[in-house]
Image 1 (cartoon, rainbow, N blue to C red):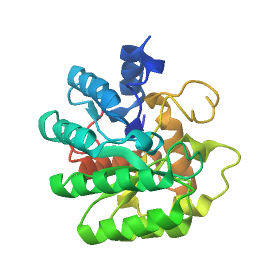
Image 2 (image 1 turned 60 degrees about the vertical axis):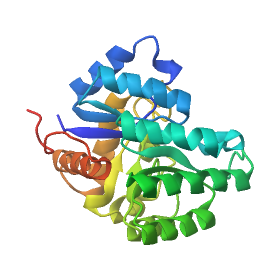
Image 3 (image 1 turned 90 degrees about the vertical axis):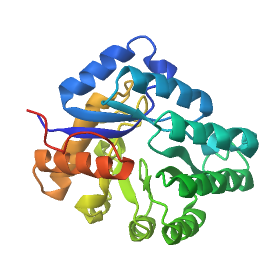
Length: 266
């Protein structure tokens, strides 16, 4: 059984309300060393904080404002709320935040404004960013270049973008995280999976969404990151347990997790 770390799970989602404890237990049994529970709104962050507190040392949480909700972003309310989570409640990153020009649920200018404010907060707190980007590569590229210059680190989560954008992120000191999408038949960009350096690669569930093969179409959960890890190891031509230890160490380093060195599982 290979060890792994789920770097992005929406465990606070109501989809897990009936059996959240069982979901967390299955993650442990499948080899998860930890799970990062995403707070994509202040409400979600509060729920995520409670889940992390109840599973201390295994679940950590984040706090941010998703680009879909940027139309309602209020810096005077939201930035202090995110800051409180990081400073007082142990949130390990700012986010999920970013740019989504596919759905455009919020006007693009307001998405950029919300992202800029969260980047500034991350710089102030020396906290990493969890970034959502979809069909917004020019603006994301410019943001990454600025973030790199400012010393802001983060992760391009659930990455499905171009190799060029990934390189921009890597050059800025960022990490790239892959989800169950890479197990889908439609995923053909194997070179992208190979090009990310071993010390910058992460894996995630993005649960309850994007369940990997062989569970595609079901409610996703962190335990199934094992399938994503196995596919990634296969494409990269490395032992799955070696890659598992690597992604655990990478996530520990990015998020500053107080946990044993990777490889601690029996």
